[in-house]
Image (cartoon, helix red, strand yellow):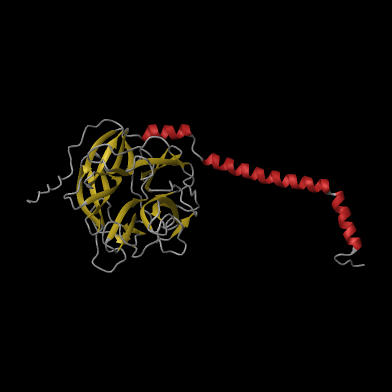
Length: 398
């Protein structure tokens, strides 16, 4: 006999089964709740296991701190130019600095060289303005990509597919970081220590107008750093960290945050994770640079306008897997304190050579002059280099 829904025999059977199995059902419910709690605890333990403990963070701080400000090592030739964003690499017995200059029109990428990391000579341009309708005609701000990141190592600029690579942000609007700024890649097969014009892909690889753009980067992309992760923590060999801002906090622009993208070939990039990896929810968190100290990855970055003191300052965060980062909560690595950096002391590039830590950074004074300065872990003396004195304003006669 086939019983239909609502039949009294069927209903009585269900009721009887329910009464007989209430204890089992209660047990099942308890196990279900306990299972959920256990999963939550495991997830919390997993996150905790990926956090860098305070003792290790303190040890990293003691290793990388540079209390001695040597001073300016590169200054622009005139007050209408601003130097910014040093990237340091080594080739042979010489050191090289890739940096950018803003001259009123936009950014160009330049090269300097040194024998001792303290005295630098400008060599010339690597990426120049183009007189065309190119998407990056008026902005080409480049940064060394795929440099070895071992602390105290060779600081060699590695090649991939026989090419040296730079990541850069570009745009075709004139002015200081104006218009739509996007990230792309440049490459060269020539000696990176020689001045020559680099090749570009001819198009951006990450834009704030992309369909998959995330909530925190839908306004502008800025500085990037690309490392070669041969352990494939993300499943990809190449990881890009970059800062960007979105329209999430105001009608014009929100806070700048640091996020990730990944690639298998250096030319096609995929956004990684929905949220940024480092975020202070206001002001700027930007310009990440990665070093590896032992089994800990260290991200040097700068903060601005999210501390009561204001200004811009350099800090760091640490990670075991390049994905989850523990932020340092102690003293700044570099902060404004001298006449040449009394407005901003920011945008790190930190290396260790022959037992000395060199912390290169962009120094900005209250006249808005920008140059490259360095602080060290040992007292190496003082630089005699100074900014060009600003012109004296003549008082108008009444």
